[in-house]
Each structure stands twice: as structure tokens, then as C-alpha cells.
Length: 234
Length: 211
Image (tube, rainbow over the protein chains, first blue to last red):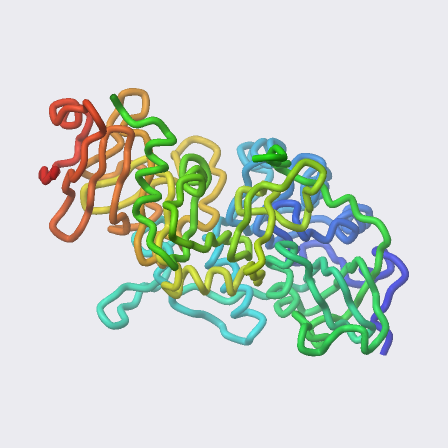
């Protein structure tokens, strides 16, 4: 079965409908599926629920889908650095659900592993626990959090083979591997498509079973949010 | 004289022990990495998926795929490892990180911490803070003693909490407090800071055990 698609639009063909839930990988602008986000924008699909640690910045990443008002609701842990996001949220045009970052990651991991819910200490005694079941284990309180799945996951990887085995690079890995497991369909944009056998099976981060479609692109923008450097000779 | 930000970071670095795995928050806590005592080795964890964080890159060597949790470009070390967000927070929530040093808006005398939300203002989100304070073995807060002359060490937090009863130590520009089940104890004063000044600028009740 062919998993390789010629471009991002083709890779998303037939998958986008108004009102679906999409998981989008990345931390800040690092390891985001930038080509797939642009293709979602171009499709004009609306009313999306987007699960992503962050919401991009103005004019980059998921900021593209905020500009076009295609997102109805975000599930995120941190949404700073985005003025448009703040404006949309404060005017009531955008719904927002905050999850602690570890709870978000674990909800996605659980969803992908068929685990409907789990208990965690994170958020006990805070606003996050309101309305959720709290249970005591060995004298400590834990709050119940539910697993998350999505209609579609869009992720970014460094290398892929035709089977969809993926390798990520450095901190661009972040949420991408767990999101790959929790999408009913997962589409991966990759920097390099390699021949079968070129990836060491011991070094694969995401086995191909979690990836249904792959698109390779030669160029990425890979913007840097906070360029920090030190002087030579220090 | 009150401690400078560097003095505060140096004092926090004295809490580190050889072999510790450490997570540093954004702001003053980031400075702690400049003052790691000689002769000890610690590994810095960055919750976006990295253990063994190196210094900022030289100009021209920035890598967009290599950032810390503050989204700053950084470098790797020979012992660095990378992992996904679920494993990163498994490390944090599973109690494998020895100390978390982070900033705060308010700390209560029972160890309650508020540092993520001011009602009525745009909320940016808690990021990984709730996970860190719930899961890391020891939580050290580094913060200015007051904000606009209002105390930040309180009987009870008035802002929404990040964690309940989670803070073990508070280092401010005026001194050091330890918090345990018995309550809050002032254990150190910054040079030339008087007990009277601390009492005046602290709402929380505390006992004094300055060596």
C-alpha cells in the first residue's frame, strides 16, 4: 500500500471536514507540521478543534489558522506570544481549554494506547481539578484525566521510509510521536524520505503502523522564536 | 543590602548536589546554571524533551530543531538525550527529577504556590508548571520578596493555585525560607537586611531560625 503523497494538499485529500478534531505536533514553532498547516488553511475547512501544546505565533504555525478564523477551540498548555490569539479569545470568537503540559501529553499517549482515563497528582487542589473525579491512592489525592484521540493528527518528522517508520531530530520530537498514535489518521510531513533499509530498525521512534500518509518536502522555513547566542571566547 | 538576581541564583545553586537532575524555570531560575558549584555535575532537564542541556550556541550555529522550554536556541552536550513530551513528563511526574527551581507570583505559608494566572487578565497557560510542582522531589521558588511593595509571601494565596502545599524553599532578594508540615521558617537573611524589614514585607507567619 502506497503511503507516499506528492504534496501536502494531496496528503490531506478526503480527510478534512468542518468541525473535526485535529492534533498538531510541535513545541512552540519547533517540529511543527508547517506544510500541512498551510494546506489545512488553503482547504478552507472551518470549526476545527485543535489539540496542540501551543497556538503558534502571529503569522506562523497555527497562527495561520487563527488568522482565517478556522479554529473554533484550542486545547493547549501555553498560548503566549500570540496577540491575535488573545484578541480572538477575549472577544469570545475562540474557545480555549488549558491542560497542564504533562497532562496533555499523557492524555494523548493514553488515547493512542486505548486507555480511556488515568489518575495524576498534577492539578490536584487547583482550577484544573474542578468537576473531575478525585481519588485517594495510598494516602495521596489524584485527579482523573481522560485520554484524547483525534480525527486527524498532523506531525513533522526528520526521516521516514515508505512504510512510515519515522525518526525525529533533537527537540523537534516533542509531541509528534504521541500524536502519531492518537490520530485515527496520521499524516506525517518529513524532511527526508529514505529507501527501505536505510533506517536502523533499532533507532526508529515511531513505527509505521501509526502513520497512514507521508509527504516529503524539500524546504521548510523552520522559524526560530527566541534566537539566543553566546559570544565566542566566553 | 538585598541580594541581586545573580546573588539569588547563586544561593539557589547552592541547593544542587552532585548527580542531581534539575529543571530550571524561565526568568531568574535560568541564571542558576551560571553558578553551579565547582566540583559537582548536574544534568539540566528541559521539559520539551531534553536531558543534558548545554549553553547557548555561538552565533551562526543556532539550530531551529534544538530549543529549550523557553523556546531559546541552545546546544547539546556529549551526554545529552532527547525524548518525547510524554516521556519527559513521565520523568517529571514520576518523581525522577531531583529539584525544580521556578518563579512565583505568590507563595503561602503552607507551601501553596500561585504562578500561572491572574483572573481578568489574558492567561497564557500553565505550561509544565503544574506537573513540575506536583511531581518533582523538591521545589525551590526564586522570586522578588514583594511586587509593587505588596508582599508575595502570604498566609493564603489569593490567586488561582498552581499546586497545593508543594513549595519546599523560597529564596527572595531578602532571605531564605524553608517550608515543611510545621509551616514556614526564615533560615537566612541577605547581608544587612534586618528581621524587621522582612517582617514588614511578609504577610505569612513564620518562625525564625537564622544561624
